[in-house]
Length: 394
Ligand code: PMP
Ligand code: GLU
Image 1 (cartoon, rainbow, N blue to C red):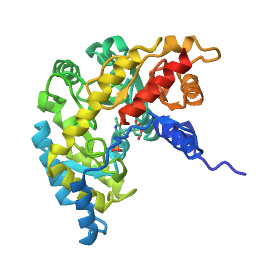
Image 2: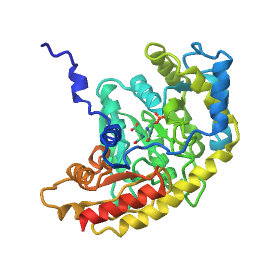
Image 3: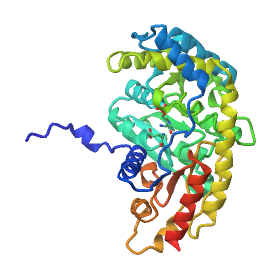
């Protein structure tokens, strides 16, 4: 049979986070008692007032196509959110609503990359950035960071990575998978470098901004460097903050020409995101924000417990995060003691088979020697998982 798959797609890896979640679900369906710490999605239900808005939208007949880039109501809600929470001002033509933040990022990369353009991606990174870059014809320039530097790129590393071909840098704070968030002074220092390179666009993926417990108020490069707003794209969405992963609403805010280009791509690919989900997202962004606090509190409690528990496992070393819902321990020493296990990918498979705990290996995040555990699950599950890991390693 002829080979119909394109050369480009052959180079792309499937998402490792999704692969692990699917594998865990499959094993559970087959009757195995697998504890899934792979999935990066809140275990809470979408708050009631948001669901109610969706039900009303269905009953009111909001079941047709909407504007490709989102309903006027949702775009206004997003403008309001940026002003209220981030101190950023946008006009309506600077907003694009997509089918998830993932879709917004993918549109952005397709909109700005010419073949061979470089995208600076600090590692550890969210698994999808490099492959999305590849799909859009770009070249990833991975800048590794170490646990000792809190997994944050330094201004010197950034400057060294910039070349004549650099088109974009992707920052993600708080980070998936490390949970680390850039402090104001760190953003300030990175911004000073970026100021010198006007050909470089900056995108910041702030999808975890509401799951943050750092000791200073979270800030952003747009507030610190208003003079760079004409080359910054802010990515966000309702998935993580409002426990709405399945509704598929994300958004981007940025310069008119870039947003217009992204809208054009969307008009020739997906059209508008789901009309009902958009109505629900208006309720999420404009409604009572008290629903955020209990979820954040639960994540912080689990974080505190899990990081301490992981550090008690021989051969595990894990630093605290300031947000998101992931622990990202270094497990090199633990791995080295197991016969036949040579890397984090094999170690993750070994844990799944022996402890029936699903974690994501660090390699697809650009950080071999680590594994990612999601604590978007109950304390009971976390305790059981840690017990099992301890047992198989002892
Ligand atoms: N960015 C990061 C860092 C993420 O972890 C996720 C989670 N999938 C996304 C973007 C995309 O989120 P969504 O498409 O569900 O809005
Ligand atoms: N962002 C989540 C994760 O990292 C969801 C899955 C995905 O889209 O990657 O697990």
